[in-house]
Image: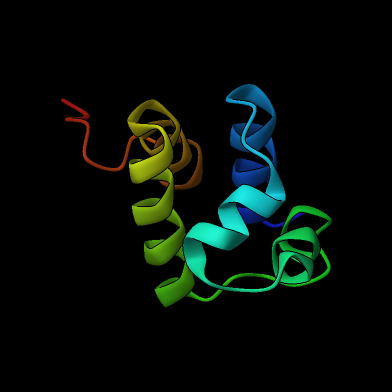
Length: 79
């Protein structure tokens, strides 16, 4: 499963956000979100930004978790 797909699936489950609710926020058909969650299609980098913005409006903690799961600790100081 792609990293974005797994991150999105986990966040939607953890924060109890329905695929339909996210799709409505994004202004897209629910089938697109279903395909991301089921790892049938990988969201583009532009779409990942839009997903993050939509999650921010729905639940800021969910947005932070999505970014953390997707990107990891890339900004953490390794020293």
